[in-house]
Amino acid sequence: MNFLEMEKIMTNLFGSTQRKHYLDWLRVIAFYILIFYHVGMIFVPWDFHIKNNITLEWFETWMAFFSQWRLPLLFIISGMVIFYSIGKRSGKGVLIERSKRLLIPLIFGMLVIIPPQIYFERISNGIDFTNYWDFWKTVFQFIPFPEGGSLSWHHLWYILYIFVYSIIALPLFMYFKSEKSYALKEKVNDFFEGHPNSIYLSIIPLLIFYYILAPIFPTTHALIDDWYNHSISFSIFILGFCISTFSGLWNAIVKKRKLSLLIAIVPAIILILFVWGPTFYIFDEDTALFFIIYSILKWIFIMAWLFTILGYSNFLLNKPSKILSYANESVYPFYILHQTVMIIFGYYIIQLNWSVITKFGVITIITFGGSLLLYELIIKRINILRLLFGMKPKRKSKEVYQYTSEKSMV
Image (cartoon, rainbow, N blue to C red; front, side, top):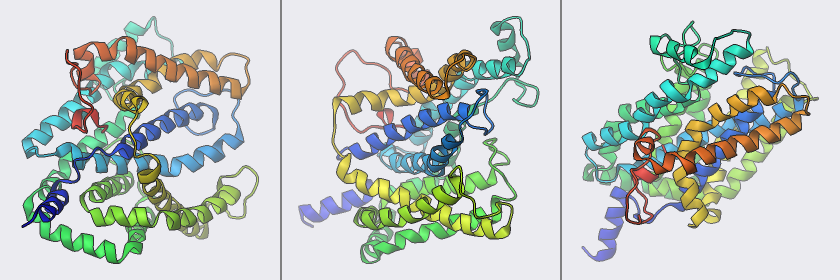
């Protein structure tokens, strides 16, 4: 066996050792979009923790556009990243790494980071407390919110779901990281190399899940009864892992990036004009016909848009930078912190006699700025806080920027 053949085998088994900068960029961009989206939730009629007294109808259009693919993008990236973060770890090693990276920040977040959100939501609804500390004591009664208690994971549900999915899929992950999977990898890679258009078949099971489960199990983020959300999120998470596992699948996505963009544009235009837009309506949204047509357009749009983003990222974003290095390490603490910072300051800002655009801009700047200050001045400098926010302990010596699980996002 020559060197090239050995290199091909190792790449198929463990993936390329070259850092995937496009994954870092996508991870950072996806979470920053999430912050803009959460700020926007204050100014639309949709259910949220605090609400401005005036909402803008056109906000619903751009937020509906992002809401379709922002979470699938996060799950597909998480699935892609875990392939590399596993490395040569044993199953036990993966469990330890996932617990440090996900479970510890989740527990800390539920006890410390999330309670201020519940506090300001309750006082905005007219529930009075003597002070915050009296309220915080109720968290340790361990009664779930909103069932009369103050314990919740709120926006950190994503961390919980990634942790659970990682545990459930661990046998699959370990199999595909072993030599036993090499023959199957070769067959799958050959299939996608010969049939690149088959990537669009992924729409079918997701569409079936939507038809069957969405009407019965609305999304709750409550873990136990969230079966439609699980069917979609877990499937896309596994798809992300497969994209990193099978080079033929990744090559097909890159090869079909232009076609994916064209496919994504058509349903996007239809949905923006006739469903998400503020003025045009041609369907009664309560009819079966609308449900069928909307479902098809929705999932064609989502998957084509995901493949477009992934395909072009390989060309446009696969480059390192100092900005990326900083953002990649800081974005996880940003995600954990941002909604609490946003709600604390947003509660007071929405009571001011300002325009919606001004309030949106100020809350956005304060959310980013407040999260940045907390990260830069406190969190990144104290090892115990780095652990609680899912970061690698700080070392005295200068660290080399490598693609490791500690520097990769969830």
